[in-house]
Length: 112
Image 1 (cartoon, one colour):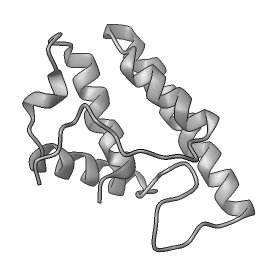
Image 2 (tube, helix red, strand yellow):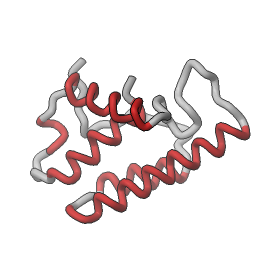
Image 3 (cartoon, helix red, strand yellow):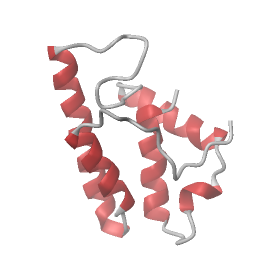
Image 4 (cartoon, one colour):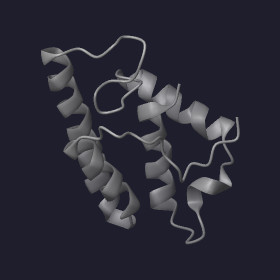
């Protein structure tokens, strides 16, 4: 698979928490990386609460698009995405290494 780390799966039912984490991801520069981690954590927590109330189909992503739920699963998926993709696509034209790191972690959310 040759995925571009700068593109993300479409989700027509994107929640506010998921949308916020996507917006913060694209704004990452240096110390704003921590804001991205915070927004991604809020997205994850929002999905956990919503899934506890009304579980999604177990054969697909959760309501906020999370395919992986455990920390280890998220990290494993992030690494797999990096290895299976075009790594240069994570950095992008601006050379922003902080955003590249955020994109790799973001992949852990949805990559299988």
